[in-house]
Image 1 (cartoon, rainbow, N blue to C red):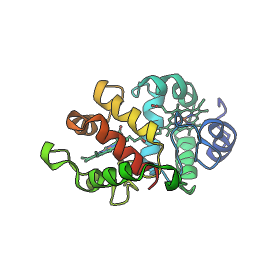
Image 2: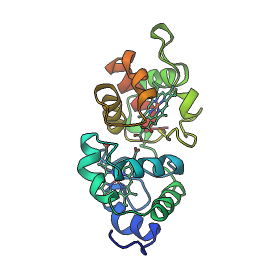
Image 3: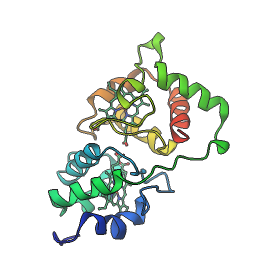
Length: 185
Ligand code: HEM
Ligand code: HEM
């Protein structure tokens, strides 16, 4: 981790894989999946972990030490590596079908009665993301729920202003539904 000559790909396979999975499909929801994540978003997150600007508890606990000595070149290679891995969503058979259906409506339409905009308007029609808008499709439901709490209750995510607004009005049961839908999408 201290050696700038180690390639991002080697780091990904030897270091990041412990938590995020060798192909970016972690199994434990403490660790977000990175497979098929937007490379621009991965780069920005590694830089804000490195600068300590992303300071949510799990981020500082796990990622500050990792990001500390990464060079910009390694960060770019890491982002390319994980972006190129195939996302494997959770199995739909294991999800609650009613919750998934409710979540799909919120993802596509938002909650007009309370002015919550559609997630799809920023995160893409299939949740695939676009440059600085992260992929959220296929992500662990528990991680999604936790991050929405981070946006709502803390200033731990430096680029979280847009998401903070989203979390003002969305209810805990709506969050659970949209997270369930995304985890199998
Ligand atoms: C989050 C990359 C190693 C634990 C993240 C994120 C990225 C990332 C880009 C943000 C994901 C998102 O916002 O969706 C990497 C890379 C690594 C690495 C490139 C290797 C160089 C590790 C290791 C661990 C770990 C070894 C465990 C010891 C975590 C955790 C989070 C995270 C817990 C979520 C933090 C939170 O909840 O805010 N990582 N990671 N990572 N990583 Fe890593
Ligand atoms: C980040 C969910 C709507 C813009 C995120 C993350 C989640 C999420 C879970 C964190 C991803 C990660 O850590 O890997 C949702 C849901 C939405 C929604 C469930 C609908 C209810 C929107 C909308 C916008 C938006 C409408 C744009 C107006 C962003 C941006 C980020 C983000 C820019 C990255 C923030 C950063 O870099 O820290 N969203 N989102 N989202 N979202 Fe949303």
